[in-house]
Image (tube, rainbow, N blue to C red; front, side, top):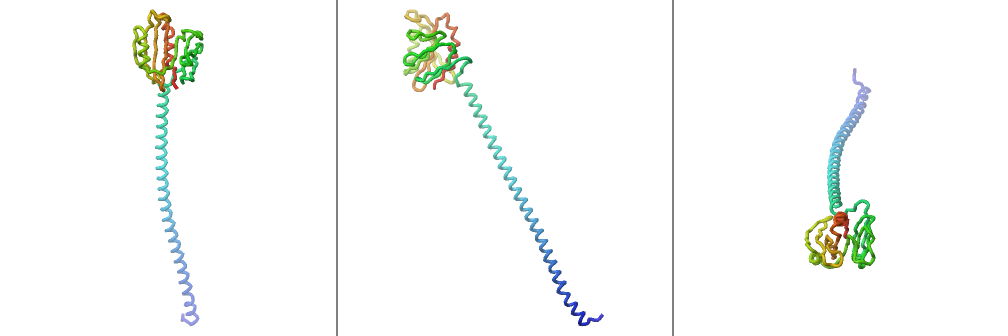
Length: 237
């Protein structure tokens, strides 16, 4: 077939169209490839960021768990110390006993609910007894709690010098140290001759406190255990 002028013009006119179409296809392919490459790079970057956040969260959780563990341990230790303090140092109040308070000298003491009590000397001494205590008498009760301004050493020395066969020892009650004096009243005194006596002394906030039990030798052991429980109930505020 001969290339007539008409055929020649037709071939020349279709060539730019084909080249243009190929160019568009190339551009589209390049765009698609670029988009896919960008997507893959972004996806990997996002995965790395997620991994970092996950590791950071795990570290935070581990840190919080450690903090919580330390707090729980601290709380447990505190509760154990509190329980030990409560069992060792707090006053012991037997069931059925009642507490009596001396607001002048800031202490509380417990006694059996059926016991009587009375204050003497502007509340300096509190008498306790299973029977009613006379208002005006030399008798202040089987058990007395007194407050003094003198020192423990001086009061203990005076007590020992006034008793027959006196002895001195140190005891600890509710984490409080007391000096204990035991002996017997002399035979020649006008009141309570030959009575057995036990006294304990301790100092607190500039005062000396004494809890005393005195009874006839034949009845001394009847209320000795009650006296010991009264001592365990003493709370010096």
